[in-house]
Image 1 (cartoon, rainbow, N blue to C red):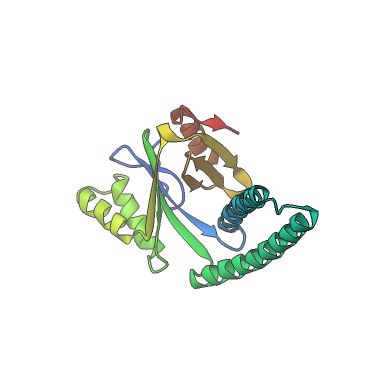
Image 2: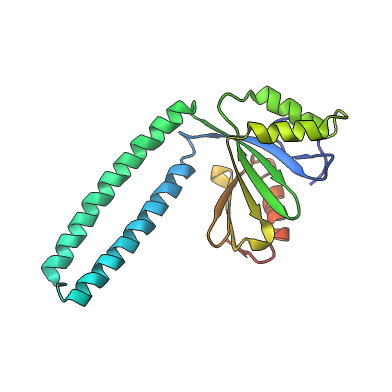
Length: 209
């Protein structure tokens, strides 16, 4: 990656040696968050099925009718949860204005995913990034602290702990997964493979899809 003076969703090399960029995810066109919810629900239901089945085997109550009844109940429950999750996702997307705004910070050791609140002005965030990128001098510490304070939620992934990298260029997304933690790095198509190759180089213990 080279240092750029492009401001906005393009990746910038900042004066502190870190790469930063903003990405706005259209929650209606890119439902990757909903897919993650479904995946968690599916794993949860699988665990429940295994536990209930084990209990029935131990008690000696597991038969064909019992298996069919349990399967039917699970399917109905899964359908209800899927519908509720879609409704909940759409409500959340409407509240958020259909946009999921994220500020990413990347260096050789970690990637930080910071969700910015809906009230944050993109122009103001971009202005702060310009200062961090070295397009203006002074106040770097103050601006960095201010940007952290604006973040709604923050997730840090240590690159040496990443177990799997999965590129999803159609969604402008790279899955950066540790053993018990999953991060999603969104980046514009112009810089997608720059960021992906950087992650591949520094996630030494990760399997690449």
